[in-house]
Length: 409
Image 1 (tube, rainbow, N blue to C red):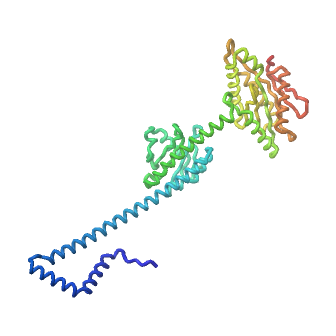
Image 2 (cartoon, rainbow, N blue to C red):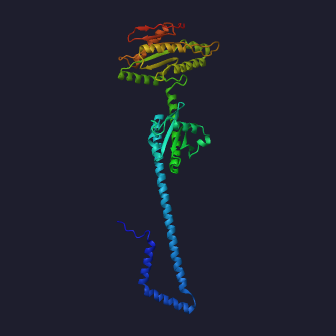
Image 3 (cartoon, helix red, strand yellow):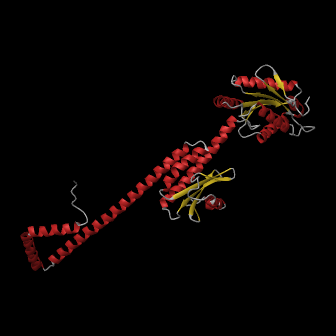
């Protein structure tokens, strides 16, 4: 048990202590007073009043010092408490920043926000929405349990209409019952955070403002990472996957088909007489033809279909969960769409056509076997006069599929 000898009754203790000393040294003090009286009579001075004044001034000085020390101690305690709270805020922000730094996709950023943002709000209600493909997407309250559908989206839309100066305010923007913070990813506003009530403590508002900045940086990093990854995995001219990545994804699709007993088919095609296009119209025109083919594939195929530039003017299309009959219909559709392309040439417009080989995966197939059959079907389409579709079975025999359009000789 700790013995406490100072506290709120220090003045009473000191008074009692002084009174006890007077009693103990009563006779000594009396002799001192007699000596002081003799000095006053001998020299004609007021010694005793002066001593009393000095004693009172000394006591007042001690009291003032004590009060000043108490004020300084209270101030130091408050500053320590503020420093402790600020340290806690910084630790939470640092934890949040570390979680965001590990996020390499938008879904990972969403998960980090969902886990940490309510903690940073410190009891205040908070929401966040992101702008994706022209629509608002809720990161928190996805089930619309707290705010009805459309309510916070309308507030976010109003925030987006504010001036750039207001969007950059670190203390947020007041919109109705919310304090809103714009999330800037680069030069574009990508989302909005809303905090309620507007009377939230200043420390919480400051923390959420810093969190909005961290989220913006994380989103920009994800964008840059996606761009670098796409540049490494996609052909810049056509926008299709490069050969190595396309084959890797084809292997994954075959493994999935083997596990789930699903169908997967491939189309292999190239541009008919492409060398002639380069020789007559130049390589820049040839590049425009390939770019147009890649763009048209992106328009006509499903998002789940994989478009790959296999090499030169040769392309590979992977059709997940597509049996042979469906693959043939897709091939005919693709052939007809490519036939509609027109690219300006030196003397006349270039109208490319393609020859397509189709193969459907079988349980005895691997990647090499499937591609070999598609390649044989492609050469059969060329032998049949080009601008047509052929499909390969497991054996050497090729099933010839009639083509409605004329063959490009």
